[in-house]
Image 1 (cartoon, rainbow, N blue to C red):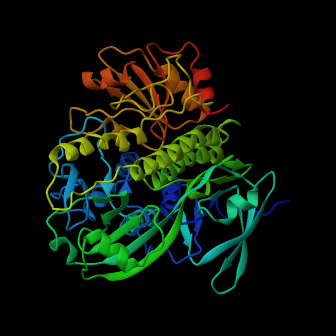
Image 2: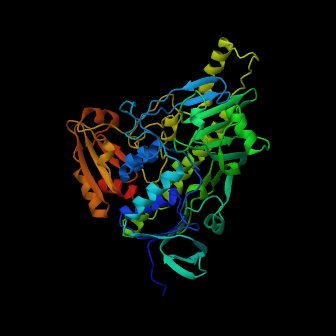
Image 3: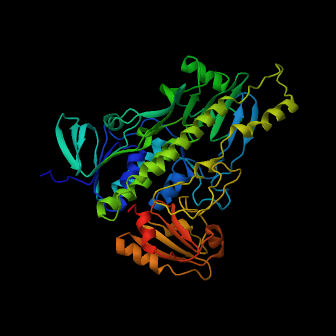
Length: 525
């Protein structure tokens, strides 16, 4: 007889991906334990932007306003500036309105937000801590684990040297690029490998913003005669900064900062670190009862902000499937769909990140003329080529679970994943499109931790058959009647079934002839 379970899910790693998974499970009242080898305090701002898709999740979690206002002043611009140095010439500026100035967005209710990890993780952790079914074990490592047909037994070691075994139905490795879980499963990494060796300088200088005339920007990209060699990001919008050298020969931190500023300036170095930009995706995301996500499953250049974004998407994708398996309404194919759906998205994210990094480092150098004057025609020509080096932000959410084993295809052709403009779509597998309701809410605000059947337009067909079939199979589902014509237009079909992760499972112009077949398909039966 096997030992009883101590909790339902063991999450290894309490970074943003592990925390997101714990929150999704906690909102579904699933008991879980997060084990983290460190103390949980984030000392370095590894990421600086919370993507649009992640902000949409933050909206559902009730923390999007906190994330948006935690760092960046709402009336401060979010420009990208290209310049020789902070004291040198400004070459180009991509103006981006402040949060206060931004027009009402037709693509998303929650645009991407500047919130570095040293601020984002504590906000997310505080929200997770409100879930009574979630518990934490910091300064604790997973030494080993074994699995059998019924569950997983993991051996934990805490900072006092005490060992204990934890028995769970499922284990999820969110323990990073060099963590235990993927290696213990023998899962190989595929990809280009190390793309570049980079350097980060994290420093404090409250005086810096007042020592130049470029004003505040979200990103300053440094360009000299050799090309674009680094970028400077204000971390807290006050005194903390991070300078990243893309692929530079060794120099002292002082030399890098002097080159960035154009002269000496006062600063306090907090951390200087060399690191590898990687291009890797795991061959699979699952071995029986153990799963991986985040950096354990894929590693990409941070250029473009797709690393954490992709990992949090994975957490939201897997959470409802684990919930279904634990509560008994999942079919045998549902957990397998995690790899089938998310791995292709990770491959795409890693490819886009590598492309974006290579594009930025290929920005041509600006050759000064030596006397301080500017050849306006040459500069205009240089600026006109910048668009080719920029990845559109909406590509990050222009993805579909094409060929998903748990989405019911309607036979329509796949959309372009890299369009010139964002293309909202309700094709099965796609992120359900945003639209504003008459009362000022987003249609996203209708979704929760279960399925949502949208009934759209003036005279939609009945959805009673789908609702009855779902309830018969145990699926959590609710019905939402939406009369606004603008919403009906963007969703195209009058009946759309949206999954718990906000992706479309099925749509139709009429009620399905066999609603049980649809429900069984989407639950992986």
